[in-house]
Image (tube, rainbow, N blue to C red; front, top):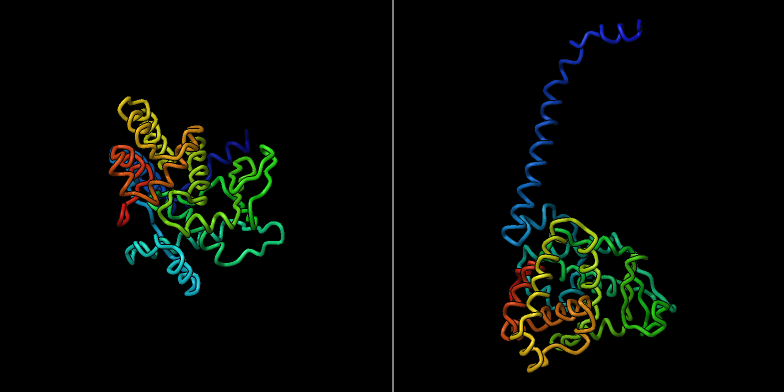
Length: 282
């Protein structure tokens, strides 16, 4: 009791100097709370994030930029401001992910830049672009044997191990021909984005699932089903399951946007909204 009495008798005047700071911290906390509420409201009503980049400070070296200019046409479609954002995101991706070569493959700067570029391209319109379910990129020279289903694969995403796996030969072939709608990198990164949306509760995940569910509803439309049967627009593999459909749809959207928009305009709009893709040509 004596100790409690002594505590209560402490002269609080010695702490009066801290009152303005405490009030400032409290106000900042309230401001941040209400900003989050507004941000979520904006994303839900406008179907796009309030912002995508707060800080852009990382840069690629001249040789790394040359790789993008020479081998990655998407980079050339961007404005100067967007190119700076793209470089920042590619540099961030390379910094945060581990690239590992398999079967004596030596991982080169070109491999890192181009793999990162595909992931950044697909998530360029999103606030969250870092693919939290990917920690490691495994690169094989050619197709590799997968224990998951005891078969040879060109690519694979393992969310449990947080690993994305590529055959480099097939990854290169994916971006070498830009309009064949066969792009291994886009396909596997979309799997990662899709699965992350299922387990995350951030703004981009909510928006992705909202648009994806609308796409599924569209697939139940009789007229759309008839058009799908008549045109055979998508390759058969797209209809394996919902994950494969979204991955194939992303390939068609990124590589043949004009044709997709002309044939399936509503589906195109839903994909564009889900990715918030606001780049020339889309």
